[in-house]
Each structure stands twice: as C-alpha cells, then as structure tokens.
Image 1: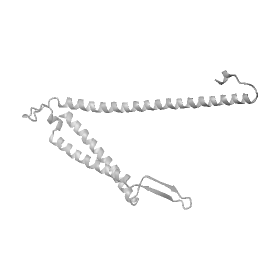
Image 2: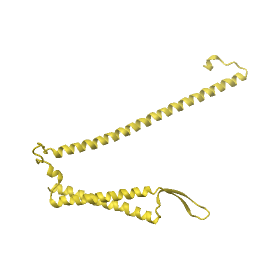
Image 3: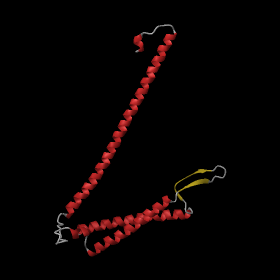
Image 4: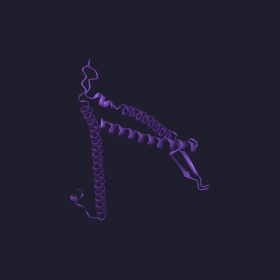
Length: 189
C-alpha cells in the first residue's frame, strides 16, 4: 500500500502541474484576445509603413488563439477531474489496480486476475517498444530515401558533366576541321 500511495501522490502532483500549465495557456491567450480586440497575433504578418511608422497588420485567423484556449480549458477540466478522482482513492486508501489484482471479481464467469500487473505491464512495454520500433523504421526509411536521392543527383550531375565534356570535345574537333587538318576517325570515336 505504501508504494501505491507514492504512485498516487506522484500522479496527483503531475495533474496539479498539468492544471497549473493549463492556466498558463488559457489566461494569457484570453487576455491577448481581449486586448487585441478579438484579433490573434499568432501567425499574423504585416509591414512597417515608412510614412507614419505604423505597422500594417494582416491578421491571422482567430482560430489559432481559440484552439490554444480550447486545449487549455480541456486540460484544466481533465486535470481537475483526475485530481479529485485520485484524491478520493487516496482518501479511501484504495487503488483500482490493487483492487483488481489477485481478487476474484466475477466468480460466475471464472475471471482470474492474479497476473493482472504482469500482463498489463508487458502489454504496455510492447506498445511503447512497438511505437519506438516504428519511429526507428520511419527514420531509416527517410535516411534510405535521402541516400537514394543523393545518388540520383550524383548520377544526373555526372551525366551532365559527361555531356559537357563530349560537347567540348566535339567543338574542339570542329575547330581543327576549319583549320584544314583532317581529323582522324579514332579521335572522333
């Protein structure tokens, strides 16, 4: 129980931090929209006018700020609910996982929960390891594509250089023909 209390305390602390960070997102963006008369400065562009020194703004969509506010409010609500929920578990001295592990929760269906922690831990490890593997495969595919692109660029460059050299050689041979000397057939090939 002591270890699960430490875990619950850590989770509650994490959700408190998430709650504070959501306030750090929501309040400044809301104040910004209020002070800028509903305009959102995120991704806005503009130019300085030389005649009066003012900045002529081409305002971006208000959706950029609204999205940030929406995410902040959603994170705030989710964090508050999780803080309350986990505090109740801590107050009652129970953990959902602890209740489910090793107990017969449904005797008529013969459900056995003795391996719950190992099974869920292994599944979680498998999911994260699979995600890491797919990220690695995506990076390797990108590197392979870059390598083949580089090789293709080198081939095109070498082909152009060969064509330039052949054209220079042909121009040199044509100049020697103009001077009256007869070029040999071996030099043209």
